[in-house]
Image (cartoon, rainbow, N blue to C red; front, side, top):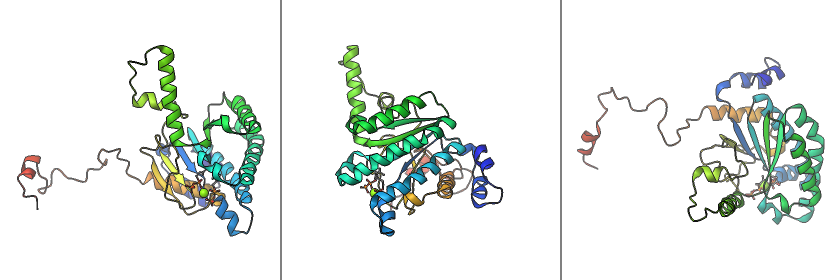
Length: 281
Ligand code: IPE
Ligand code: IPE
Ligand code: MG
């Protein structure tokens, strides 16, 4: 948070927004469904791939701002297991852009202590993409500043299936399949995001009100924020606005709000026994 304020000019819009944030309640982990690239291109009569290309600039801004805010993790949805349904030339364009992004950003990752981790089934990606991802993952493996998860060929259900199979495989290897018991901890620790906190905030751009098979387990208690802004237009201001909105949510996790709505001193307050005596209608 300190880094962000230092990077901003006092008085400017983002500085004013940033100073309204509570530095103690910055989300530890933000996940983003980067949607709307195609529509952004269509609005300009461009081919869809130009929307994806423009989306790279938004990725750079989101990553830079997340580092400056001091996030522990940022998870970006870049390609879903369902996205293979798209035309081949669009998919190939995406792989080209991904390789270009990785090559260009390596120095940024190193300078900012960012560890890049690809989450998803990498074995089905073209070999050149796998090699580029692996190279960047290896080079950034020792970085501890911020974890950047790139969800590529990712599916929430696929991830859960992979986790279950990995739990089974481990039990088989250890010879305790018969006594195997699945727990929340064992599932969490076999997900692609093992060791990371669950996202506090899930942002989706382009106005779609769905999760599209993203982090199904991990978003159990994430705050959802949907903005009409298309991904290529999503900038630092939008990210700060999302965090501001997040900080004004009442996260109850099934419990009660921190400021009790019921004043137990008020004459209207009733004991449970008194309540049970009341007629239902
Ligand atoms: C999101 O933008 C990026 C990917 C899924 C790769 P879209 O390509 O889904 O853009 P829209 O939703 O068609 O506008
Ligand atoms: C979700 O967006 C996947 C990514 C952002 C990578 P889609 O555009 O594929 O999702 P749907 O089809 O609208 O649900
Ligand atoms: Mg879309």
